Length: 305
Image (cartoon, rainbow, N blue to C red; front, side):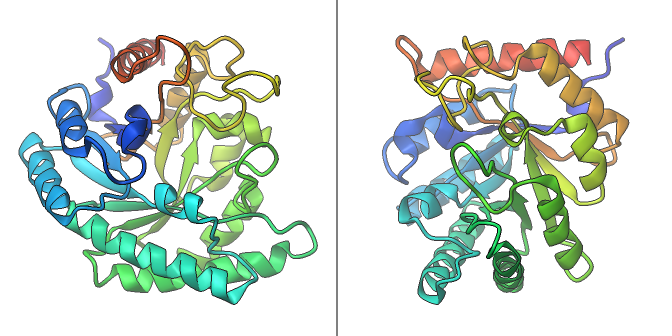
């Protein structure tokens, strides 16, 4: 009998990608979170900024009733601000830190057990080592502040460096450097790897994840397009599984699950969040269709894993 996916992970979905009308922290957030909470397929959810404190309280109660684990993503806050936690500009870095501190409060309000954080932009090879030191200091401050806000797991999300986000973290060796610097002092720190970013980094999960095995504590699944610059989904846009020109298909997703199992990164004793980042991008695509596509892809890929 095929082992249940629910005995190996929290099956999550990133709310503000599935419902992009909510990415700015307003819109039908309560209604769309409720839709996902009513869907028994998902056992975890990742939310972004939620401006209204009453909405945060309502969502916290909905997700508590539904029995869903919650993570909070800072990307919808930081990316529009164009600020970076590894910036060599002290003013920009302070803005980024203050924004994350506010996100920690929001994460606490919604009952989040984890928070997702991007490194910020890569300054180029000449300044890269300095930027990594700055990032380590920024993350240390965030981890200290997080202790006052429920002490969630603080996860550094690994992005691409070449095609879209142009992030410092980044390639596996640089991610490893950050983790090795922080994990000895902070057990609530970890890395988040995203299946959709491996092609953008020209890395293979089967080769990369063993390097990061000790430090990876959360996972995303998704798709990307990078070979055709004229493709409407080019870059780090999280199109649906099966989109023409996409890099991540069901066999690749299945292989990813197998690698996670083989490395004991998922399982009954781990149960990390493995969340899908998918969104409607093309003609006739709706949130509901994209979510249904995602669920079918997960089921089929897990069945083959």
